[in-house]
View 1 (cartoon, rainbow, N blue to C red):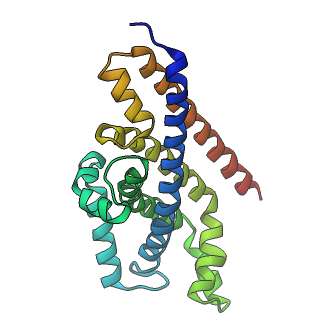
View 2: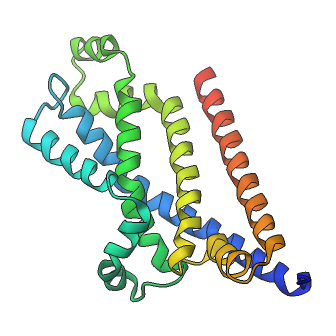
View 3: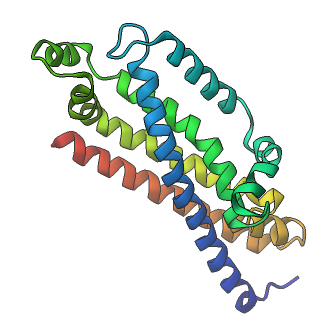
Length: 220
């Protein structure tokens, strides 16, 4: 069947913007949750600034539980919660909720990994000069890990692009929904190819931007 591109291009453009919106809002809210979680997991671990075994164990376990659930299952499992938050379980706005729940624990682990790469000697030197825990966290720990944090957040963003496409399988909107509805169910191969190309370009652009920003921070 010949594709009517005059009909499909507006839909492809709309689906692309839906994907950008899903990823942007999901990344924002997931970072607002995941960044503090990652910091707390680091500073409350044994031998660190604010060692607290109970807090570390509880938060680490919660993060592990949510990271263990595949996104497509998580999206279906929290439909009641999604409806409670946004009033519906279908569409772009509804897809943001499971994307945040999926990405926040992942970002927390990436933040943890970045902060743990900071040399312990730097922290010890700050403590010896009388710096308090919060001064060390925001004045030394995060700035020292910022370059790696940018790279890891880039990885999380690319993961969100993939998850947003997967959300189309259950009516999440965006490029994934378009690819399934027309490229798969209606056998419009050309539409599928275009959506794949857009996703590849999007991911390549994100990775390039992340790498460039990380290099700029590292040279400062």
